[in-house]
Length: 72
Image 1: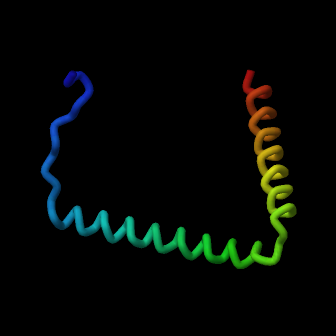
Image 2: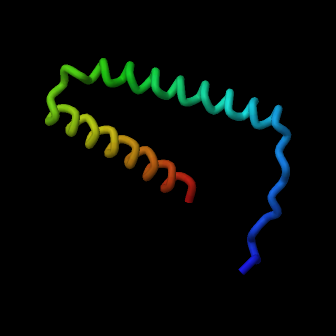
Image 3: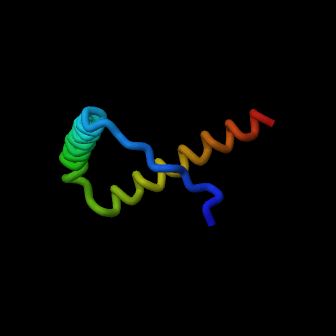
């Protein structure tokens, strides 16, 4: 079924090189941020990390619920 398929567009090699450079820098920044956050939480126990994750999820669920209720 070809209902939603698009035709492949030829990409300029210069554009492809620029896109890979941008993607590489984004991945580098993500790796750097992950390393930083891992070093900050390395001393915490698994129980503490689980508690922090639960608190984080509850906080954002409460914020989303608040925004949803106020938008109605």
